[in-house]
Image (cartoon, rainbow, N blue to C red):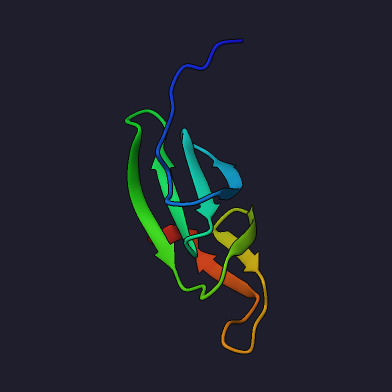
Amino acid sequence: MECISDIAAHNGSIKTICTMPENKILVTACDKSIALWDLVSMTNIGNLKAHKDEIWCLEWGKNLLVSAGRSTTADPSIYLWDLRSL
């Protein structure tokens, strides 16, 4: 198997990758954000920021993204995102 490309997606360790329709991926890392990448153009097409700590998991459905991470008193552990706004 051969690597066909690479993406400098985040500053820090990658935590989670979630594949999306239409050749897109969501990526989280230690930088407390979710990056949306277009795999055709290899460009970042958006960032979701709300977490105040590391994001540990992503799950998506039809129009909803759920992100979760370490729960602290300053940060809820689960966020819900409307994918229609991306």
